[in-house]
Image (cartoon, rainbow, N blue to C red; front, side, top):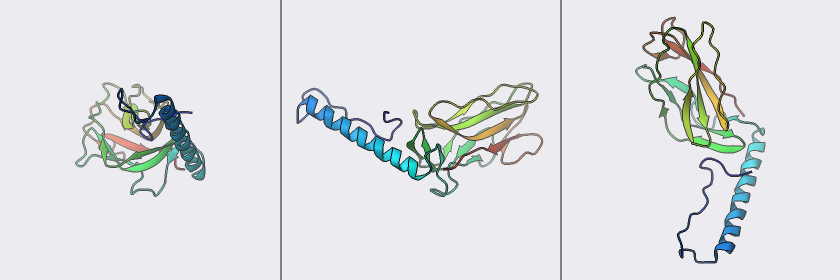
Length: 173
């Protein structure tokens, strides 16, 4: 197991900058990494051992909401989660970029929190008469599905019959 995302970053030293021998410091650094892995594992187990959003850790808990005023993007609220047994945090509202409307058929895109990049990503689905959500990435958790219609102008919280809308698919631990 290795530390992923921004949970722990190993020290980076330039030549002749270390106050002790490299071999000794590398062993020390590896022990710190192992200790952090154990702490992350134990915290994950305390919340049930699975991947998901930690409920009531922050207001709205990584909820996906429409931009204000509504446009072709969404915002992910701050919150905490466990992804691949590692802690994950978004500290502030995180907007997605503009999401292009489908051309001829509806499409479902997936909004996910990614551990390795420590960001929010939108995974584009395929256009179809009855679209399905795409598969999520590795070391990521799905937060919402976006049902998008051809010619839409905005993404709303609920289905208005014309524009896109958000389907909350968060899992909680």
